[in-house]
Length: 112
Image (tube, rainbow, N blue to C red):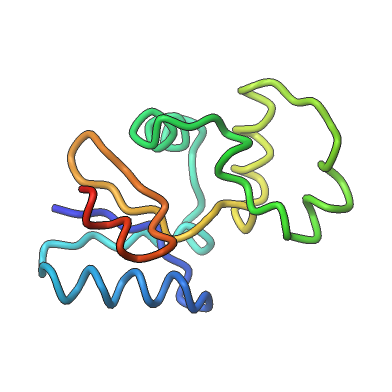
């Protein structure tokens, strides 16, 4: 079973989902902008990605540029920021078992 954190309005996310659908039918789609994210869920994603919270933030987003750039936040502060602003999350994130990738480019999915 694959899980994809998906934003249907994002071309890269749509490409990732299409690529995944060509490989398998066992997909759980998480519409994180609609359903939200918990801090615990974010922690699990980070463990599987083996990345820090700041590494999964979209730095081209207006919120980041205006309010977060050049700021120092600790791990839990970043989790809260991402939870409250899920648009900041890089996408798509694809998880299988104990590993995850940011599927940009979509070929990153093959690493799972």
